[in-house]
Amino acid sequence: MHKYSLVPLQQLPELLWLEFILVRRLDAAGIDDWHMRCMRHLTSLRLQAVVSTNCIVATGDGRLITAGERSEVILWLLAQPEVVASEVRIGVPLCRCGDAGEAAPRA
Image (cartoon, rainbow, N blue to C red; front, side, top):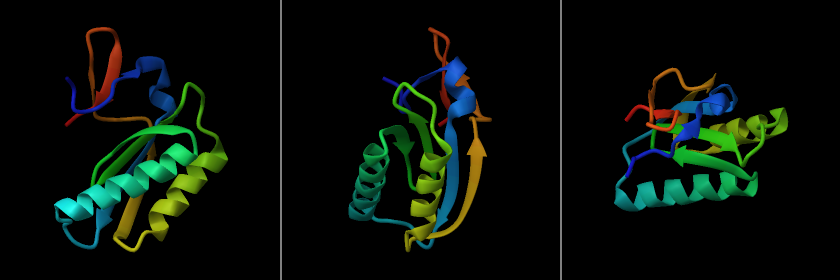
């Protein structure tokens, strides 16, 4: 089983990729809390995502992400007290391909 969900290649340009830096390293409970808060927010926007402590990669649930949804995710991320810096990208520059033509961020 892959660590990251695979995405069809035609959706790569529609991925929202956010890299960020946290104020400090999180312990296990902090990581669980961070993941739960991120996923709750992304799910409320009907987005599918892979979340880590330095990256969020999101895509629409079978549809394109709107500009409003992109803005909502970016503003939410920047409003989190743990986040000190962020970089926004569209698409996934570093990816691996699966056997059925999917792609995912490199681990």
